[in-house]
Image 1 (cartoon, rainbow over the protein chains, first blue to last red):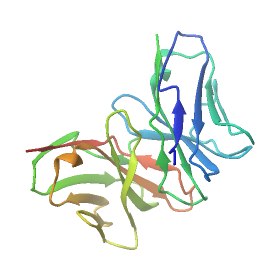
Image 2 (cartoon, one colour; image 1 turned 30 degrees about the vertical axis):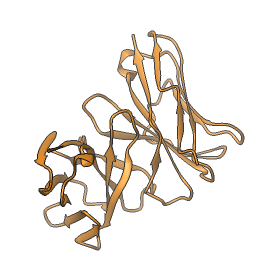
Image 3 (spheres, each protein chain N blue to C red; image 1 turned 135 degrees about the vertical axis):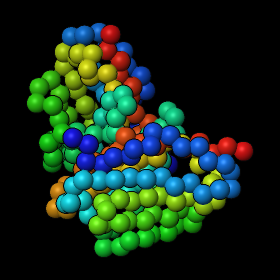
Length: 114
Length: 114
């Protein structure tokens, strides 16, 4: 029974490149959340998605960042034209129903921007 | 603007003794609080939670206390075990907000020594 799967575990990009982070929720979970942890900080909410819908993107930076959760396949967090300040650990979490705060987190993707 | 604060970055406790991890918050709209545990290279895992209508919740060796007037909560681990060594995050949910949009503290690294 696989948990939340994130890949890649580590991603290195040069400034200006695009980063794509993938997340497959736990089986039976249809709610996906992305959190970001900058160095020396706590996790910060970015976006909440259900299949084919963005429910709450209040934590997403206004530019360069986008997220999707298609009908088929994993959720994707996309960062265009990365900058050094995007270097962080990006965690995906899932839950079976809305209103469940007991999120199941993946192991994260560590993004390093050179 | 850090709404959830964990002022102790680290804590060292001897095996068998009590570990007390503290958390303060500033947002009066928070109505649900959670503790997550995180091992290196893994995502956070849910540990225990408490609603604002309670002042104590206990689950085995873990007890969370909530003092609403002081806007303070604490996690007690008794007795502490070496496997408890991890980073502990306090998190809070805002009343009426997206259920899984949690605000995290910066974490406290607990080391349980033999």
